[in-house]
Amino acid sequence: MKKIAIHGRNFSENILPFVQGMFDDLAERNCEVIISETYQNFLSTTNINHNVTQFYDTKKGVFEADCVLSLGGDGTLLESVTHVREREIPILGINTGRLGFLAAISPDKIKESLSELFNNEFEIERRSLVGIETTQNGEVVEFFDGVNFGLNELGLMKTDTSSMIVIKSYLNGQELNAYWADGLIISTPTGSTGYCLSVGGPLVMPTSDIFVIAPMSPHNLNVRPLVVSSDVVMSFEIESRSKNFMISLDSRSKVVDSDTKITMKRESFDACVIKMKDTNFLNTLRSKLNWGLDVRN
Image 1 (tube, one colour):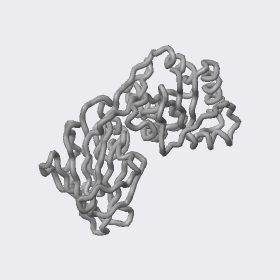
Image 2 (cartoon, rainbow, N blue to C red):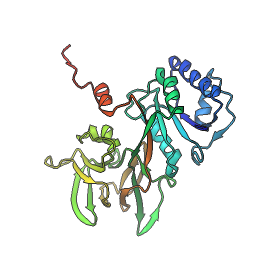
Image 3 (cartoon, rainbow, N blue to C red):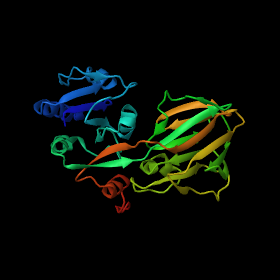
């Protein structure tokens, strides 16, 4: 590891010693470090000493690095994916936030994880992304400044003031269903532990080659989540009394006119997530979802 990029969010006072220890460790290894401008803006308000002089614009992203350290929660790692884009730089998630399915490394394990990282004692999991194209009157329109992909899910939802919407859905040009619902989630395997889970979708092993289509509060109660292969092309047309609806890609969202049509397929590149040797998705499920615990005790 010669060049390390770092992105993060604000953290509580008790996390500060671990973050300082991380910068001290990196300085001792004489590696080149570059920090996102947004994270540097926060660090400048703390007592962290890092002596880093290189910063990158989060809108332009990381153009050159051997890996990215993401310090925060899962949302921070999702942001880091948008900084890396098609360059597929591996990302290590360090959990200074709350739940943390993606950011699985606890702050007290940072030093140990860095040692494993520099000794190449890790694996890289390739995580599929959803990619979308949006059109109006046959013309391509951009709503997300070219970052038209998501690691967790694509969401098509009603706006706060509207009634349920009708989402006409097609698989490879063939009609699937007209969902009368508050919305529709199309989730990657990674996103199965996120929004998709909250609307009744299944948990999926993160390297599976599928998408999950899960309706939000469907009008027809016999409509259930559907698992499809990730090589399908999906298209959507929305009918709404309010003449608009919301598109979301992970944590980014935009209210658009109801004449907007969406085409979705697996993105041409992946997110590369660093998996340390003691990190296990099944262990994470048990610890984060309290599986096997007797709630009566």
